[in-house]
Amino acid sequence: MGSRKQRCLRVYADASFKEGRVGIGLAIYEDSTLLDLIAISDYGNSSFQAEAAAIKVAIDTVNQKYPDSKIQVLSDCLVCVELCLADQDHFNQRIEKLQDQRAAMAVVRIRLELLSNSNIRLLWVRGHNKNVGNDYADLAANKARSVKGAVSLYRAGESKMLPSVKKNSAFNYAALA
Image 1 (cartoon, rainbow, N blue to C red):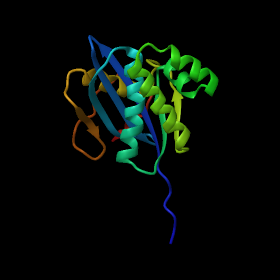
Image 2: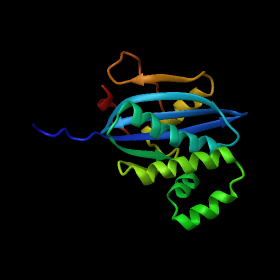
Image 3: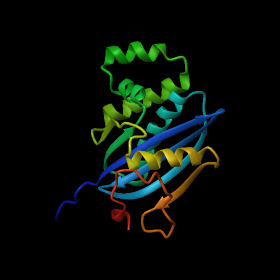
Image 4: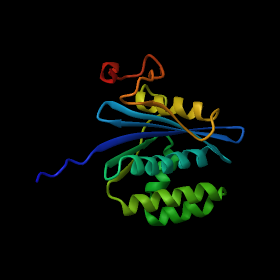
């Protein structure tokens, strides 16, 4: 009986915050194939809290939809990624200074998930820098502010048209066909 190869997924997580409305966008990839583009609405207090929520939702969503997969979560929020990955002393010092308790709890939950599950890696990706995965997550996050709940904008194998992103994004669009 052969062992099944573990799936390796990349999920770009982005958030949009405006007037108390939070939009979370997830672009889930396997290799160069976009599997899911998801928009999720929420309420929040800050951009930082929105970005932390996006990372946590990315982890939870991928764990639920694609169990036992290796996951790379990519966020363009450098401050949030650095805080989640900080050594224990720096983490404790910085988390105590956070005024937003909801954001602090999201970061603590992310950190616990990262420490307890070796299949999850959190990485920073430069935002708005011709990265189509991040561009799709950004598009979904902006769309999410105007919807209720979670909406699938695209799923591999469905007949939905893929939303357009900036034409100058560096990506092989033929891979989506």
